Length: 84
Image (cartoon, rainbow, N blue to C red; front, side, top):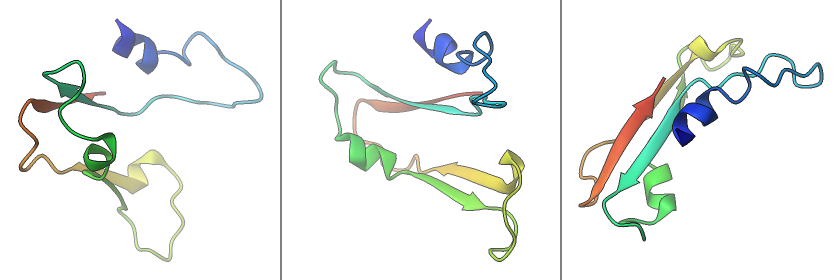
């Protein structure tokens, strides 16, 4: 339920000051232990965002980026879940 709330949090709370905000991708690192199995910074470093277009061209939309997640050699007890 929490993940669904995060994904849809801007749907029912429009504001002129925020413009059009939307959650595009939610990446969840799920741990087998409640205390965690790996430091957050090590898991966050597995996410890489790259521009699809040439570097000298400005990105204009979400589609101008590619999100890659390194799933190789994940620590034991850690899995990756992608939403939307």
